[in-house]
Image (cartoon, rainbow, N blue to C red; front, side, top):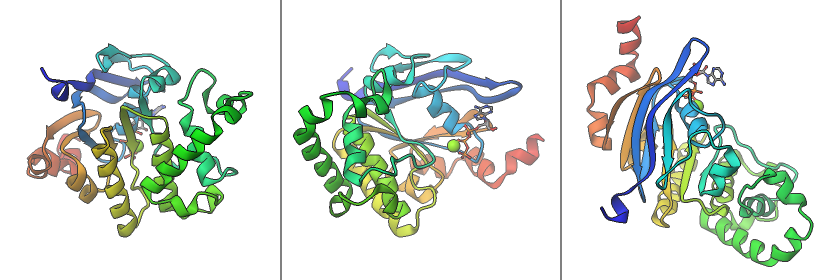
Length: 262
Ligand SMILES: Nc1ncnc2c1ncn2[C@@H]1O[C@H](COP(=O)(O)OP(=O)(O)OP(=O)(O)O)[C@@H](O)[C@H]1O
Ligand SMILES: [Mg+2]
């Protein structure tokens, strides 16, 4: 099997229970190296829970997560991140008191034992690598189209640009796999188009992307392959064309299964 067909991420029978609630129910899918793969599903379907498990925020009740050939199930977040599996969050999480460029610089230090705050205060770290970090941060800001805003305070950026900044910061950690949790939430049409372009160019740089997203037009435009989850279960997987035509997917989005199964 060539490297290009290898699954970079393999989610195997992942189940997550919160008390009596089954948020993920034996979910399995493979994300091939180099792919732009999307997970979609209605509100509360279990998408963020799946991301939390994949990124090591908490271990699954059952099942395995395999990344680049290694089982990473239950490893803590910093250990997962240091292997090159980097995520962004559904709610924007920037350092508001830092500039746009400094936010990316923080990402340049791949999250290690002490996490990002420790990286900020490690003696000598900032000085030693300052020039290289600055060069790289500016390059990444240019890449996402925020070069002109580099010296602004991060919280002065319009919301759509904050989301792009999060992508730049995640890229600074040099991910093999980038997990994006609803990056287009709250964006207008123009901002969503800019984001779609950035996501496609990230993928073209060789970064495998796993995208959770509600914006169907964005998913259908950028994803090569899509898994659909509903009430914690994977109900379909296929190309955008296959997913669009899938009766269970149509039913899930129209609320058909909710009434049928209730
Ligand atoms: N830490 C937790 N403790 C208890 N229940 C949780 C926890 N996290 C998620 N849940 C529940 O698990 C289910 C799935 O939630 P999750 O956030 O994964 O959905 P989602 O698909 O990301 O939804 P959305 O599209 O609204 O972001 C929901 O019923 C949610 O209330
Ligand atoms: Mg979510």
